[in-house]
Image 1 (spheres, rainbow, N blue to C red):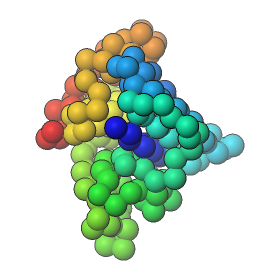
Image 2: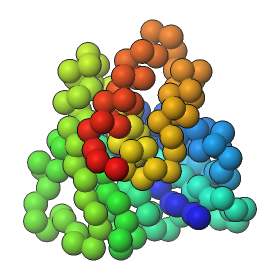
Image 3: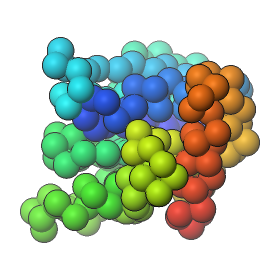
Length: 179
């Protein structure tokens, strides 16, 4: 098994953190993992992405070319990286992204799942945790990583003042989609 994953969005949305937490959880689950990230010099608001290669065997690549799973948290990031989604792949979108897409932005050869990540995060009290909502949805939709493993990593790696809201965001994302 090998899965190539791209998380993308705008700087300040927690894309890099989400990639690091997911990578750590996958590693602790016993997978081989490569995680790279890229973000613009302008930081907040600029484009950023986190790429993860996960496999149950050795990984010889340091970059992925096509993604089996694309998580898009901003319309510009979606438009930039949708072309790198492999046919038959899974696209997880924040509903705020899908509302801004036109017919020309959609692909019929992938499964597109839209969920209200930003809305859930705002309801929980902090829009920044939309990234955790998306990770929870990824865990449920793919079965790639148990929710409990993600929660363990978040509990250890997220600062105490943000821990509880991040854990609730993971749970809400997990409940927002069907497996």
